[in-house]
Image 1 (cartoon, one colour):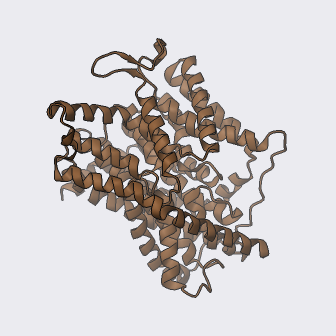
Image 2 (tube, helix red, strand yellow):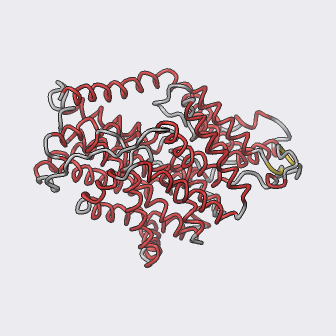
Image 3 (cartoon, one colour):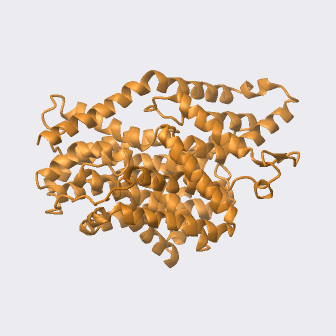
Length: 515
C-alpha cells in the first residue's frame, strides 16, 4: 500500500501541465530520433541534454523529458527496421528479420502497429517491475558499506561489455580511460591538482555533459562526414505503409510471444551491461525455438518474430533503470547518460534517492507509465508521420545535431574552452569508434571514477590500510564473484553469441536480396 501511495504522489507530480507537455514532447522527439538509423536512444538523449539544461528545467522536469526521449527512441527504432531493413539501433536488429518481410508482403502498417503494441507491453510491465523491484534492491543496498560500494562499481565495469561482447580488453581499456579522465582536477581529500597542467579551466575537472555530448553526438557527425565526404547524400525511399491496424487474431496470436519477450527482456535489462540488445536477441531466439523449430515461418514475415524482440528490447530499457535508480549503477549505455544527468543535478542515485528525493524518483516512474500510454496513442495513428522522417536527408540532419551540441553546451557553461573541449571529445569518440572501442565504459569511468575513489579511501581509512577489507564481508565476496564471472563469461560465450546474432542478420539479408 505504501508503494501505491508513493506512486499516487508521483502521478501528482507527473500530471502537472509542464511535466505532461514535456512527456509528450519527449515521446515525439524520441520516436523521431529512434526512427533515424544510427542515432538511437543514447545519442538522442545526449543531443537533448544541452537543451534541457539551457531551458533551466528543474530536476524532475529534466528527467521526465529525457526518459520520455529514451522510451520514445526505443519505440522508434522499429520504424526503419521494418520499412528499410536498416535497424534504427542495435536492439532493433532482430526486428528486421520478420518485420521487413512483412513490409514486402504489403503488411508494413500492420507490422508497425503490432510492434508498437509489443513495445507498449514490454515497457509497461518493465515499469511495473521497476516499481516492485527497485525498493527491494534499496533495502539490500542499505547494507552496503564503502568496501561493498567499491566492489559494486567494479562489478559495473567488469560486466559492462555484456554477454554479447567479443573483446573485453577493449572494454577494460575504455574503462581505464574513463577513470583516468575522472582523476583530472582537484584531489577531493588533499586539494592538490591532478593532470591539470596548471590550466585553470581543468581545476574543477571535466564536466560530464561536455564528455557525453562530444563522445556521442559530435562523434556521430564526424562518422557521417567520413562516410560521405565529397559525395552526394540522398535519402532512402521507404516502403509504403498500407493498412495500419492489424486484425485482432494477429494480436491474440502474438500475446504469448510478447509475454515471453517481456520476461526475458526485463531480466536482461536488470543485469548491468547486458542491455536491450541481449534482451531482443534472447526473446527472438526463445520464440523461434518455441513456436518455429522447423524454421518454416520465422524470417519470412511471422508476426511473432516482430512482437517478441520488440517486447524484449523495450522491457530491457525499463529493466536497465532498476540498478541505476536503486544502486547508482547503470544497466545500459543510455542509463549511463541519464546517470550523468542526475549527478549534474546534484542528485545521487542509490538507496538514499528514494528517501531524500521521493518526488524525483516517483515522479519519474509515474512519467514512465504516462510515456507508455502516450507512445501507444501516438505511434499507431501517427505512424505515417514518423515514417516521413526517414525521408530527411542526413546531410540536413547532421548539421542540426552539431548546432544543438554547440549552442547547448555554450549556453550552459558560457565558456569557449568547454566548447573546444567538447570538440576534442568528439574527435576522441570518432577515433574510439573507428577502433571498435565502446564509448559506454569511458562514460561510466568518468561518472563513477570519483565515487569509486572516495569509497576506496573510506574503506582503507576504516580498516587502517588493510586491503582485506575489500573481501571482508559475505556481500563483498558475492559481488567479487559476480564481477569475475561477468568479466570472464563474455570471453567464453560472447563471441559465439555475437556470431549467432550476426549470422541471423546476414542470413536474413541474403533472403531479402534473393527476393
